[in-house]
Length: 300
Image (cartoon, rainbow, N blue to C red; front, top):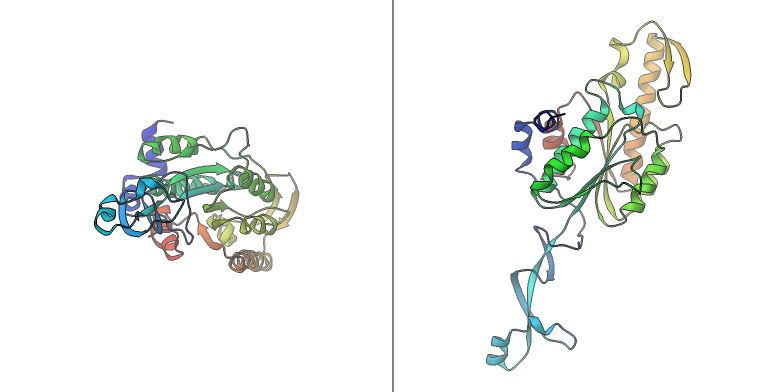
């Protein structure tokens, strides 16, 4: 796929214009290994002067203000505003169930990851995008700065459906590779026969701001107008077969089950300090980013 097509598919000019005015927001303070653009209230050793404090034994002599010493005959240290280095992670579910809908849930996840990653790169945040099936031998690239946008898009373009990894296994492997603090956005349909709870419970124990974006297609949210008659349903991941006759009582039962599933995920996340959002792939990514994710505090 040509790079012009990648930009057209994942980051349209209109979306880019929106994203350039935004920045990612963390509820926590992170100390990175490099200096970033985010001003911290901590006093550190960057270039912007903040204050003086008296010298104490063991302080770095390089930061003594000798002019103050000449005037007051006392040693003072210069203090500076330290800058933050924000680590931003996006973890994408690339299982076969995500290859559903128009656009597919996986395509939507990649568009959302590109949008959020672009915001981070514009602010020189440390950005890493991976899938639940990413192996330790080939982790996602660590990206920083606007010049890394093409690398990010190329990586996203290479993500294909079919990584049928249990949510818990994928979450654990991700945390083994990325054990630091930061913001984590998990984009998934949460469809796992073992349940989503063990994976989300594990992520909630990490030192990260966790955002769970449950991505579903319109036909999954409201199948009444598109699914009719006698059907044989085949599980795309394990091949299980179920034969059904679509009827109003069955559709009503499906709706109650779906509502309970979504409410359960929302409540589970809220109790553990994680932000939850249901994303309908019919909603443009630009609207999702500029409205819903801003409301939940991820962007400003």
